[in-house]
Image (cartoon, rainbow, N blue to C red; front, side, top):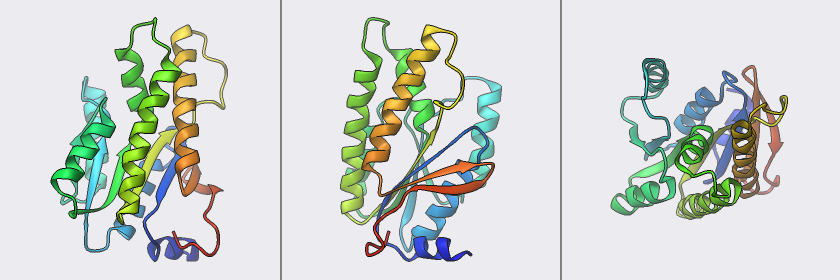
Length: 204
């Protein structure tokens, strides 16, 4: 374990955002951080993907195999804030770590559920704020929260209106999550780059 990793093991509750592209190592890093931070509590893994076809089902199964079998998994494709709040209300002292994997799919699910006449950025911003309110309350109660999301604003402009709408919605959600987070880590090819770190005197 590196000094940087050791610092995170011996830390207070925090909200961490893991950003990166596809296959950058985000989910694996989330599992590693959660295992290090869980202490004597349990881990709540909140999955936003739905097994709509064989390929997605295989991806879900592969991710499930990467994490310990005693972690609880809750599927929440749309109502993240309400679903997490309900679980924490029912088991207020059970969990020490919450992983949300991932905002990328969650925003996609929201987009596909909205009529074209709805302002997607405004809608997802409202939902993201509600989610972050629930998660920041969790950290104030001693839990550590790990959010996973993709960075989709570094490539070419999407050629379709739907693609551009999605890019803008996810960008807005990522901005709000990064602003609320204690630390933001960018993963590229499995290498971690800190984008936002806590002050030296606050142990996260």
